[in-house]
Image 1 (cartoon, helix red, strand yellow):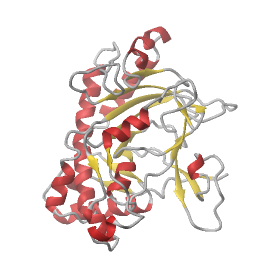
Image 2: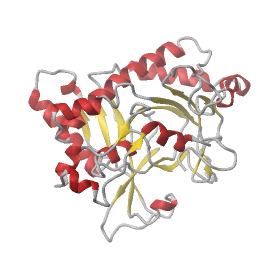
Image 3: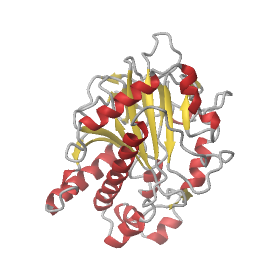
Length: 352
């Protein structure tokens, strides 16, 4: 089994500030180059957002989350996902399953609002907001800020990948109506004899994940691939990744920063240059985390970018016949396949 490193210093810290203050072109380029290196080498990084978000704001969101999760079970069940489209709303403790094991957390999921909602269609219902004062208003404000942040990071990544202005505008048109997701997760202490994890090993299947993490240390663990003979094979990875070698490192919270990672859509856009990285949660505290998933538009046709081919030394014609070229996907179709049966009792989970 792969060991867990006690340090999180291996993940880089990147300041998004230069993309808020447009006066320093050189500083923006440094940020973009750092993002590119982080995505190539880790798929994970810390993003310093201290110039973008007041530290008190996510703390207030945590307070509101605590107020909701402290309600009696029957009150929380009033906004159960079973009332809607099996995606939007509250999930009980251990209702979600990853890799055949119950996840030791409870949560609420929100998605981008859709036209003509229909709760009989997967993902096409309506969001359910807790009856907690200021909850909807405060979290809706957070959504809007994370959408702005998502576009800033996408632009910075486009520069880091060497995209032209026209290529960036084309990519921008695939994320300018992001089918975003926000989760509010409550973690009770993980029992010593629990057969599973607070959230099992998985990769994110979207675009960018922005995690506001609670102060609990050694909870979020990131799997870093290593080719060295000194590393040991992990026996607790999903089946398709069970032969990978590497080590788990702790991505502990850093003040003023959120933890970010790229999902499978960026792996396609970059034709494999950027990897969606395995991660898991082993939470022995009692706290709350707020991941926001900045995703492509529901109708986006995600296909490898010419800039990625240039870095790989391929032209577009060669890439079409190369077996290593990633195939295109329509994000909405891909998402529907991923989330179907997320919370099924039969043992299929969100990340299976």
